[in-house]
Length: 598
Ligand SMILES: Nc1ncnc2c1ncn2[C@@H]1O[C@H](COP(=O)(O)OP(=O)(O)OP(=O)(O)O)[C@@H](O)[C@H]1O
Image 1 (cartoon, helix red, strand yellow):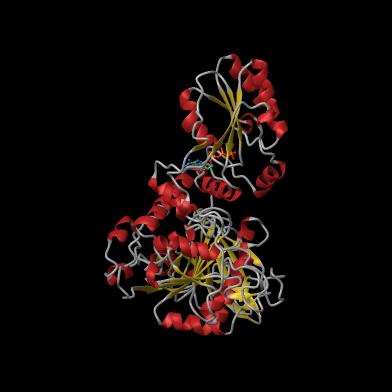
Image 2 (cartoon, rainbow, N blue to C red):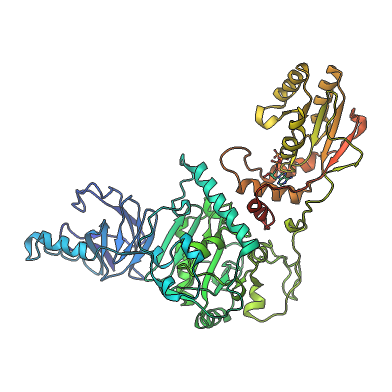
């Protein structure tokens, strides 16, 4: 069995599409297309002879379409025999043929009674009117105000929505110049959504009425930066969502290994699963898989391999499923809420999700070792349970949900961002003075992201202290000479480094002694769990200026070097500085108070 691409207008000879091999086509001699709107690399076609389907991925800028579905750059869909692929702008109709021998070239338009204008007229007639987003459209501002009971209003596709109006709808663009402003906008959206989730989300109070949208017309993949979204043909928007993690929840490895040894190393975890999903469907739920796949951005997992696997899983389950995939770190990665917000605001046809009626199931549930008689291993993380907790969703493990096992024991992380006390004392001993009237050096000691820079900006700089920071100047040597210069100019200096050991602190004690000024130590008491949370928060709110993310190695290195500061080192006083949250923006506070680390 071979696959060929045929021009419906007979413009060129059938083009072979070898099984499993990507073929890129566009303007050029092979297709005889000269139209400059068609890129030379307009579409990628990947034939799957076993399933008699071809995956179409748009590479060019102008839209490719399959039947009535218009793609955009980076989007994919599959087409089958009998369906029409328009290479660009609703023009150049093609079809695919699976056959044992090379098909003949159809008569060209100019050779038939259907002349060129007729052919174009046909193309224009069938020019796609709807995009996948029209079925799972971004919620417009007025949508959020609309009553969810107006079913017709929600079912109406919003084909008038201008493309790319939201930064979430652009491609990854991670290297583009617009990255900073895109991230800033995205952050504002996410922070606003977090705020809404924590404060005002009104989950259709008391109403168990189900609201449904149109069924998605065909399979399609979309990319939104570090988020991939798959809509299986037949998926219907609904106010009731049954969300599932994939690995360890819907599937497990065939090999029995923790990580799959290849793309086919999977099987459905429990035989009860397909039946349960069908039942949910019949009860009006939309079934959504929400999965973290960090391997994609780390380069360990090709997106195409993952996409094929997800589609194969859904085919085997034989239920229409929407899939959201967080491909990297950041706001989309569970337990953060980016995926959930995308689902609610941009991928549910404008229908408000009823959190109370929805559920989330996952195996990253914080269960300790031996949580059941034959389950020795502890859960690798708690990110699924925390994700549900952040949203306010009912949560169950796969065993509880599919097999009806009793609730297992679990542990939440030791750091709970909801409990950080804004009224706690900022420093200890209470008799200490934060700022001194006479010139001095203050050496900070504390984990990365313990809050040192924020503290000094708020409490020291306004009183005339200047800051020396090794990360900013490049080396400790430069930081030491900066400190010397500042002291010469009569300023008090705050050394804003982690300074975990005696050696790193001694450098500044020596400088202070040489200058004849006293030196104090401010010990920042944030625990490693809190500091990691702050770091993730900082990373998620990073807008292109300020701090770069800190990885686990840096935290571990601090821990291994740490020696508690002592007065014997030459300090006149050691003051403990506690992390006391203070936010000017309630939206940022709402985000801070979510679990951000699995
Ligand atoms: N008092 C506070 N209230 C709210 N958020 C805070 C507070 N202090 C720090 N943060 C937040 O925590 C994160 C880390 O803080 P900051 O950058 O000040 O830490 P740091 O100890 O200076 O880190 P590093 O050593 O890595 O430079 C930032 O996102 C900051 O906004």
